[in-house]
Length: 381
Image (cartoon, rainbow, N blue to C red; front, side, top):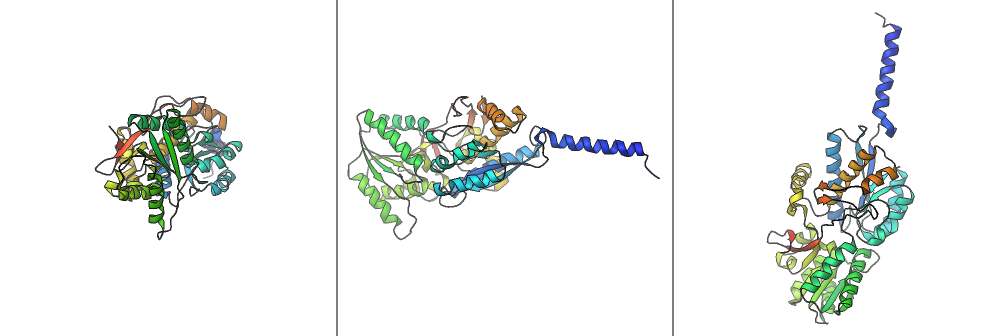
């Protein structure tokens, strides 16, 4: 039996309408590709992979509930910069060449100094994970920035009565954040009449010389008889410094900077070594009451314990999706306006509000931490 012509026409029209509805104003039925940039290989891979998993969890949950405002699903592009500033622009160009409009990251300030401006010039909206103020600009961040971290560190130094501080600082090309934090703390301490000495630390991975190198750097810092040792490095260096400090038998207090807060730090030190210092930073996700659901979902999805910074990329992705939905757009300016209008968003990392002018989180969750008997980073009492 032949189908009447008017029925065929109606079916064809209905099919076209269905296709138009599926496409929506985004102009595409393809998934929205977003980038996650960070150190997904190399010495800091534990951090970068945790961040990548955080975004993948947020994307999985979004897609399971129907996707974005127009039904569009989201996919993730992993952009591995290895924490190397020399790779930063090449990584950004790969992201830009794929037509990606949104990036969560990078994490290392030395990388962000090199490539965040490149993203912005090419209308890629970043939710940056860097903490150095020089990396600020269009977009937003949920991370504590160094202008928000430094007062916490300075308040600790004052509270313990530190009058002479010996600093161990990664001031290499990849240490933009660590050098900047040391500079800020030194300026504050000297303003208050304390004295400061500095010892440079270079990252070395040679197993034959690694132990002796860091022992020598620590011994050099301790020659000035400090009452506080401040360690501004990333955690691979911090592990070695913690070991050398514990082995030295020295008694001054020790404060390690935020970039040492990692589950890999406690995994590669003994409890005594890890407890030798306190830290500025954010507790790992399992120790944050606001992250209980996230921790459970992360473990179910990946069979792993979440680290410190994956909860921040998870929240970054969810805030981005909420901003896209409110803007009903995928364009840079409307989404950024909605992003910077975020107020009172309940996330895994706590309540999130963003300053409309700076893009900074107004209630940055940074504290002085200690390592407890379970080798967990917790807020120091």
